[in-house]
Image 1 (tube, rainbow, N blue to C red):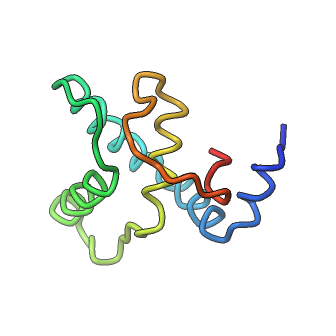
Image 2: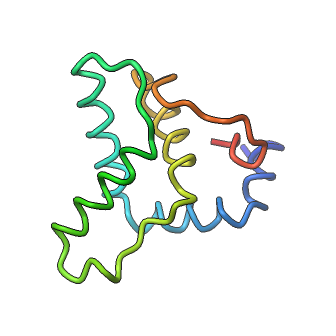
Image 3: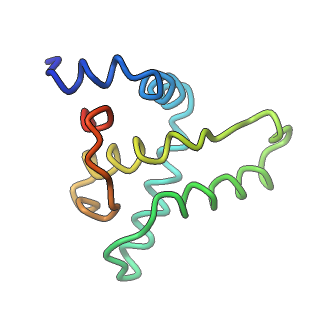
Length: 106
């Protein structure tokens, strides 16, 4: 069901680019999920998505052949933080997010 907030998000060009990227690169979500759950298992109650994003950026640069062609957009971490907290109940509240109307559809 499309809601008002979903409509607002779909009009946000950053969300559209995120959605396209996420669909083509599900392994990014999985890596962020694994890292988040590992931190949670170590007893951390909160963590910064930006920190995970930069760690992932480094890991991919080291692991991936031709990594200079693969980019992690700096606008995507807020979307991933919300998506992870929505889809993984144990991560609810793990990331701090700002209440931006354009991002609240997730």
